[in-house]
Length: 637
Image (cartoon, rainbow, N blue to C red; front, side):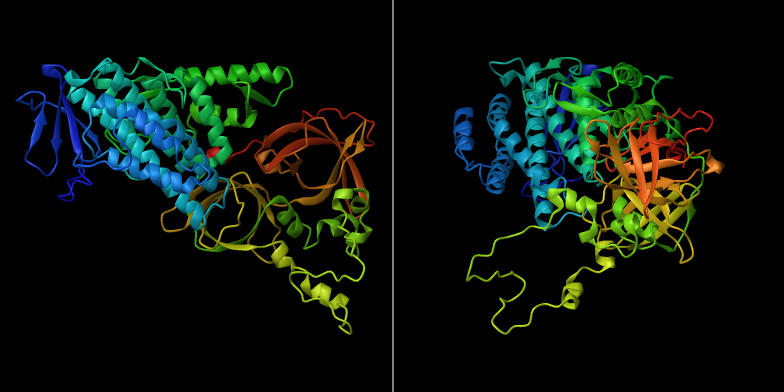
């Protein structure tokens, strides 16, 4: 427990505990004071502490609105919701004051409920400001994140206060069953606390101090009151029990979140909201329990097999085997119909790659086969498929790769064929001069821009195809851990293709970003898995039997690697490419026809296919079975 820090009460922490010998006897102790408020005059020494951080109710006057649900609803309804930041600040002030004013638990709950729907809309709007942004957030998105986190914390505290006060003063609760009030308050507190954890994981940041502990202690409080199995109606985050809602939040911390993109984590959360009741949580050790969580710690669950400490009284065991079996069955049923994703609740699409990740994370723990060796050198890194292809092609653009070094964009047949790639032509009215923002208007006698001037304004290759010098933290036979101290590329994400270059006389290695972790000192760690020691760049055009051929897109052919049993594969953009498609590969006027076969892997950025050569586009390839398919070794590293 954190001690009281001042005499004004802004940071006063309370310790709540129960005596089993005297029934549900809870005591509340104000740390730093000699005063102890108890339901009974004598408190048993044999107690289990429940540590929750709540402020002292020392506020005499509440200013935002009259303290009743009707006034709260009217006040929040009149806020200018077109100005999200202003509304968020007003809600922050109201919740902060509400948590410090003395109220009956029933009235406090009604007021929070009156604010909750508008609060949810505000939080959803704020999330649009800091999600899908650069990995290192700019100033404004960072401020929006801090504001959202504050609202989540204040709302969690508000509902926690309802539960604490309803337990302490159950005799004063009117018009509602005290146990039901405690149950609903704890369920909502877990929901808001869990949503804050989701946002933090989506941004690849560490959970703030006491974030997991608060979640655990809310569950212990419900467990001591025997409320964990009761159904709760929740219009904002969905109906469930306290146990299910708690497990939904815990399982987000077990799914290797630093390997996932923001949309992937959101998809997993929605899967857990629907299927979380299949996960078992028990106090007794179980051979099937894959994870263990210490509810007295500030840590997420960990694999039971690597838990080094002795299991204490508050250790619980998590068994997700029923969830894994259900996901495998759902995936197999949809795969038989040729689908690549499932539709959840009629609106949310969950790709099979996300289901595979859940099966891998919740199905078993894989130990590393390779040891990591500390290193202190730098690598040259290119990010993205097109950037990497530029350097693999020896510093040639995509057009030069296809048509030769002397090719100019005006000669590109795809440019002439596709109207959306044509330069924009504008009609210049008579006696009018076209004025560009970045150059002064031409006057009579002014020299016209020369081709040399135009060439000088074109971006240099290092600007169009940037290379980043990145420090190596450690290395293994399967990849690197990199420390990125310079400014990150704006759209870098897990699952991106990267090129790795170690020396002037070496080829560019092809790799993929498997995980990202942001540290508190503005440094970012990246886990890089090597896919191939070299690649052959091509342009690829999908053949459609009805509409002919599509536009050319950059791809990389990865040669076979006998050492790890990897057959030759093709790295393509994520969109459009599918199994069994026929594709024309082109470079320097050469054309090769292939048919894509099994999709070996895919991320949000690229797909990797096994393929077979064919003589012409009307031919069907025979599926290869002699060469084993390459399987990612990242989980074994």
